[in-house]
Image (cartoon, rainbow, N blue to C red; front, side, top):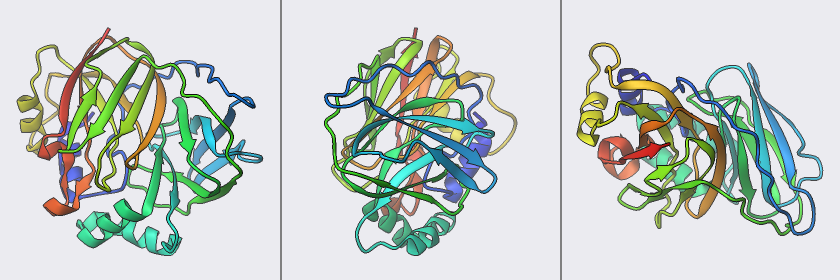
Length: 285
């Protein structure tokens, strides 16, 4: 994670999704997800120079689906839908509003987009389509391109997969969930905020003993190279709306990790959540 670049980008207010490039993320194999009526559907999303191409969306039903993301680069793939009356053209204009910390644009996206999560190329996981309707996928990471739309049919009963740990975005903003998880497994990310605020997980390995205060100081600085306490090993998810959850499969070096979210807060003139204190330390091992 390039902390100084990350701080400048976050303060500038870019994008609706993950703002950093992972230094080394490695996906584990996708676990089996129990399905009461049919096998869990698998969607393969490939990031291209034009956007995202999808396979496996034909015959897709509401409920849980596995996701496999391929392609080059570090852009997460966003899966989402728009609420009734919010046009795609307006949404794309509002995305550009993030670049200027346009509070009205940020508020509209938070209120009008139902974000279901996503992962970076090379990673796997699962998301939940809450109801039938039209959904879309598009690259995240500050890159705005034409979304790829698809239709989801009637709901089928699914079960939540077994997970090895949980990271929970809460009001505050703040973090809850596990403080220690295995170095390899499946992680659930859940947004339990009671207000319409989007969150994502940016998880970076750091030297043992690194404090929240040290990380915050580095994020507020735009001088010099990366701190020497930033180590190889990271994980990224895409954004989630309140009351949504996703899973991501991972295989990472053991050690201490910092968990951050850099979504802009419209009530704080676009200040990234991490600079408001949404920083937490956890251990993998």
